[in-house]
Amino acid sequence: MKTETPTTFVIFGVTGELSRRRLIPALLDLFAKGLLQPQFRVVGFSRGAYSSEEFRKFVGEIAAAEGNRYSADLVEKFVGCTHYCQGAFEEKDAYMRLSDTLNSLDETEIKQCSNKLFYLAVPPAYYMNIFDNLANSGLTIPCGGREGWTRVLVEKPFGKDLETAQELEKRLSKLFQEEQIFRIDHYLAKETVQNILAFRFSNILFEPLWSNIFIERVEINLFEKFGVEGRGAFYDGIGALRDVGQNHVLQMLALVAMEDPKELDAVLIRRERAKALAALKLKEPVSADSLRRGQYAGYRNEEHVAPNSETETYFHIEAEVDNERWRGVSWVLEAGKRMAESKAEIRVYFKKTETCLCPPGVEHHHQNVLTFRVQPDEGISVTFWAKKPGFTTELEPQVLSFNYKDSLLDQRMPDAYERVLYDCIRGDQILFTSTKEVEVAWKFIMTVMKRWKDAPLMEYDGTI
Image (tube, helix red, strand yellow):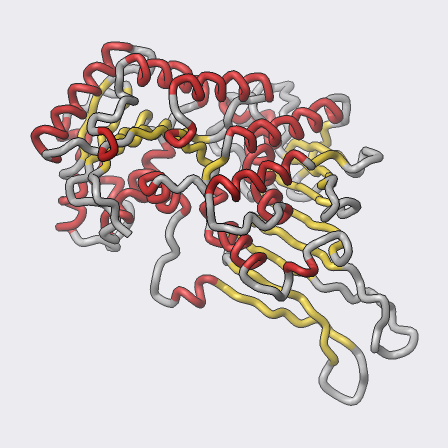
């Protein structure tokens, strides 16, 4: 579905890693698929001294890095839609220059008032300056009433603790309406994560079993083989719990734990996600095994990392969703860098059967496991037990699975950032976190941080 009104994308920090690796390629994909109006424009905003020709060369090199997926003619058309405005994020006059650039594009190239989408691809430290300058310069005021909206996209992390998150949200709410604010957690846009709701609520097969009556525990893993990879200055002040725990891991938990919203509606879905997170607490009694943190060997030797750093690169948390549906079920949340493999998955362990139609004396340990594989090899699988072929009654595990790559055949799965950008254009906030979700997630994270502040920081090398 293509939107009727052209959109101008303003990317703050356009020369940074996020823009180069994710945003510009995602916009190119949307353009190639015909999901953007021909009059769409991209305006890059950064400190660098680029001429228009130099910036377009920069964009062209990013497009070339995508290989031969696009024709030279398509890339040329895409690059021709890009413009540049130089300025520092704290420089008020730069926002007036940006306003002049946008007005000029509307008048001379787009020929109408375009939607304005401001993407903050910058470190959180710059958020407040950019928010204030956008509002004070009038850039957040739509130029054409109903036909020319303005929206702001904010990358995680949303604050670094509950207090800073609340301060950020308070400022946002003063400057923008809630429907203008799109807080990005790109994990919500990953295909398997999106499919959790469809899988649960569109099939009668599992939802009747989706409670503490039949489920023993849920495990959520987010492992990476690589380390901080040049992000030491940022990561050493954040750590794994803030970097991926407060957002990616808890958002996956919310989708598994939430109640049926009854409708595919952003307000209802975000409300139910927030309720699930509000019921989350540490599983008592807390022990050295149920709440752990670690740091990979060699982390303190990484560039821009303090030699005596106490920042965790791994965490293991055992929690409980304290409501009627889930009370008593263990939720194991685990994430880390420099692990043995890179994977993100959710495993739902159903309780063992009470009886066993198997040979006498055989250990009874038969358990069904449902796995949502978020990455890599995106898909869904169910482990069940069946009789081994032959003359015995011995049981063996079998797997019933669905793999996205097999179903797509020659098609390419949309990147999460494609979906994020496209849904923002459409005004669909389902894949974006609400103020309430941010608040209740931080309340849980702050509880964890208080409980583990005196816990030992274990060193690990691939496994922990």
